[in-house]
Length: 343
Image (cartoon, rainbow, N blue to C red; front, side, top):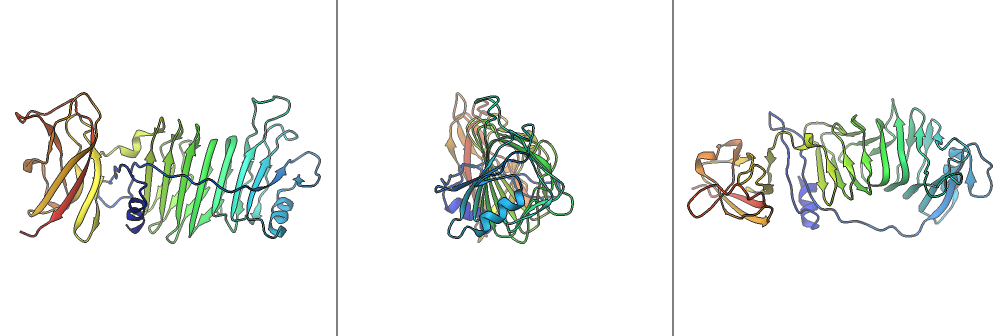
């Protein structure tokens, strides 16, 4: 709960649609706009399995990780991935590799195909980054596959920012948020987090935030989330989020000291799907447009006959004209607030 409101306080959120399970005790999913952080300049090394090693070019990933750890004073690194001597598909062997504070994996174009071919990247079973970085990025690696069995590639019990650009990362047991951990994913430029099978697990005390931008894709079944865990999906620009993330068309309320609020849309055309919240006989519900979408804008109201009292209960918002007729061409979004007056 605190993490949700922290995101709101930081001004990141422009919209939320939290999705509930049938028993209303599910993990929550929302839609928001993310802010972005530009990292300072980094020191570069190159991973070139199968090729000659010289200077800061390594054929052994363990030696590369050890070199980074012994370089005092540098905490931001770029690991360039060179697939020229490995058929364009270098692999990281099984092992535990310590990472610096910030690390970025960047694919180098294959000289045999200038400007057109970047390498893929794979990990043998149980490649573990431990201790994990605080900032992790992958760029120009069209396919990244980790198939871990015993231990996730990255386990987070504090915080981790992950940027994906022109990458599709998939496999099994890649990221895990535990013991109150927070993972923030940003997907840019046709990136994809998962390819239809779970790669991110979230325990009952942890949170994952995903920003999907610039034509990027969030497939179904990317997350395994324990009851009480939170996944917030923030979709903007021309991104593509699988409809399964909003399959129940419900909204689960955030509540602070008896005040509940959220954002939803008139997704049925002039009417919202049921919005799940704590509703009592003395609840006062207010709604207001925050974005126009459609050829018409009506007046918003919450009909009493479409309120379901309960914990959780629900309510429906309608857009009507001056005659009380539903405005079907109003597909806008709105903010809603509930205060229980007790009388």
